[in-house]
Length: 365
View 1 (tube, rainbow, N blue to C red):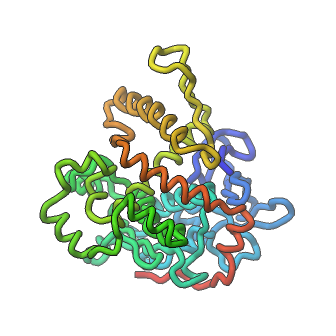
View 2: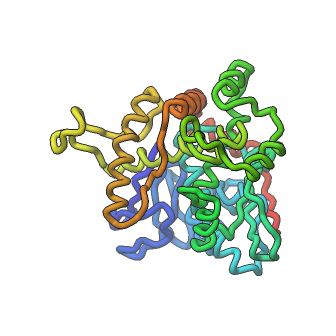
């Protein structure tokens, strides 16, 4: 299920993070089951005879709606936040709003792919987020994943800080959404690899994840990536350890499918009749669930080249500054296989997400 967000009153296009229509100024809220916006009256909307309320974090820019019988006044995305800045840390909370926006976009994509999302408050090892700031108390925050919990440093939402780190680490791409997509790859490696055969295939492609991560980390930051890393990996960081190779590849699968889905919804396609570079049109799909990886990557090859040219015409760097070599194609094919095996119906996703959900408030750092 994909989203074509429009204001329910004037039908003007709105972005997924919109709280108020920029055209008619109506207050609106986002309804996850239908992927549509609804108008608000006294902080609530009626959808198919059921009442939905604004999330209790709307003052911090959350526009998702909460079902009247939900276990808490927070939407599903906000409920997955296990730790957040203290209520009086308004500077950090402002950064939290931007990070939560990226998290909602991530969760929508995971849901569209039919992936199971089981919250940390539902079962041990479930998905959760610690969103805390290294600037609040001067202590470093390590971005990472452990036992289902993804930790993000809210300071990364500051453009100058994130760009400085990107340059210092020699990365071609660094965003909050990129961090979230990478870290959730660690989570889904354990969720989607359900038997010995899948683990064996994974190790054949990515390496044995049982090797020492600590030793690999020390080696990577001492010696860096091998000089020929680009012949088998999507990024330098992917060379550090098989865990990171899988997570980087999973993140790129989300980059690719998410961007192609957006292009499809907008109606972008490449017309072969206006160029001699192709024999057929390139028409991206909203979903590649029933398509082979070759179709997905061929569409992406052409669309990413087009997007890169558009970026360059504005004086920016490439939108997708990566090269997908044959070994990486095989890795992406594996991710495509395990993701498209997983799809759940919206009802199944809802049952997993809500079963036994607690109503406690997130912990403040």
